[in-house]
Length: 206
Image 1 (cartoon, rainbow, N blue to C red):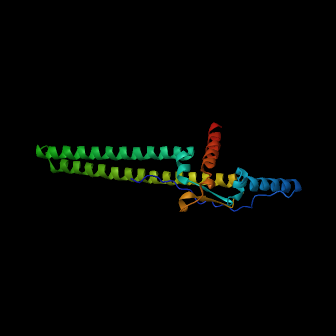
Image 2: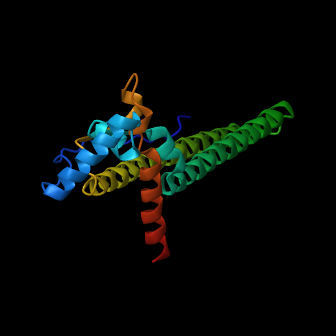
Image 3: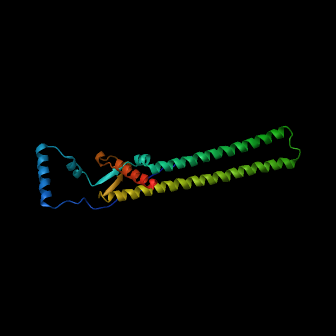
């Protein structure tokens, strides 16, 4: 039985570049910092951040593993899957037991008429038909719930990333698994996870 696999819709968000100050004081301060950097040969954390490209990336597997909404949905889907497997075993056991009882009855000449034998045959066929319909319904419910859960998680993450980027102004937020290599300094996965869970926990407390 396939397990739900949650994936996030692409969240590549266009926005303006970081605003820069045009005041003389800031220019002077920048020159001083630059001069100090040239003298010491060291790069400050601020300078390093400014040297990075204006995009970041997210490890989607980590987000899905740590985002509480995704974990809650996964637990719900696993419950549905467990229930479906339990129902299947119950139907199989009932059908096998009834078929075995028919077989023993035949061996012991328990059927006194053809009509009684046909009646049990019809009962067996009815049990099989009922089992098939019930399992088809459970399977349909499982698939619908899985798709709804996936969509809910996708929408939640995408909406948060767009809101998050309003205060960051990145030109793009990429998936780590869509790249062969990307600078680890561009990783904002933990920020995204913390923000998602903070928002989700706040909603649950209301």
